[in-house]
Image 1: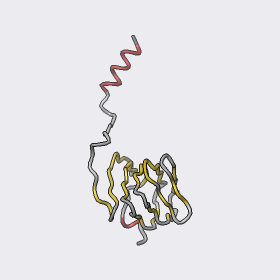
Image 2: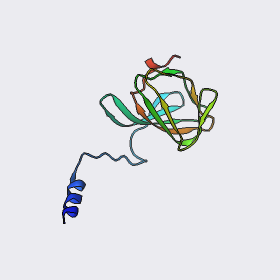
Image 3: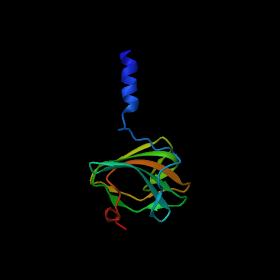
Image 4: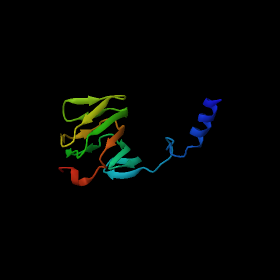
Length: 122
């Protein structure tokens, strides 16, 4: 009985956020790259980036640690690192990030500081 009661309380809790894959707004970010914000709180953003084939993000710094999970496609970081779907990449706060690019196109989940043009070195 306690379990059923807790289940009903949990179901009624409106503090959860669910965004179906086909919902939410994709916004242009830079040429060939779009962003879909999932959640923002305490200066940390959870978001998706979609890179078209051949798109690239210029070198940039991270004001906070940034976690990246490749959902689809292949991501190239600098000239030596490739990250496949399911692969994880962590850029530490203050680190200089080399060019991030993709030949195939890619969709990424990221969590860190809101991306800003001021952080790029291009």
